[in-house]
Image 1 (tube, helix red, strand yellow):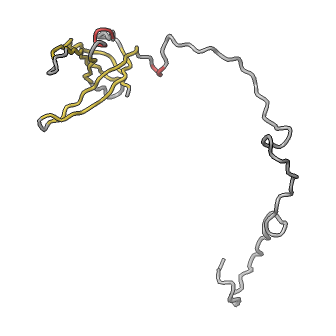
Image 2 (cartoon, helix red, strand yellow):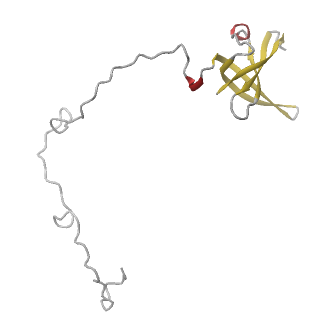
Image 3 (cartoon, one colour):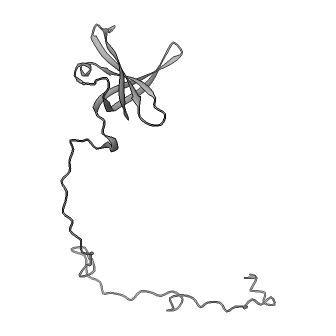
Length: 158
């Protein structure tokens, strides 16, 4: 998931020792989203990335995050973990990315020279299409006022 916004607060680095005896560290920030109703989102970067991610207060970023909730003592907690950050660019295109322009060349419409037949398939003779209703493309149109109330086989009034 991606979140766009401006970093408004650096909550600092936290570190400690796990029950297994391993050291851990994480750094937390608060981001304010863009839009008509901005939201404040606290997120963290865990492990060695906390030292190298390079997020600064006052700059705008597009963050790639994972959102996860867990239960502890009948209460739920939600973590937003950031695994990548890049400078924000409106429209989603990075300012340093440029794409070469292709010259305009009008294309000729496709017109096959002969009917398609897979290689190795026997060639069949063309057959005239079968016309429904005895050769006419459409059935004859009903004549107006053709409903006959005295005819027992014609039970539809339209």
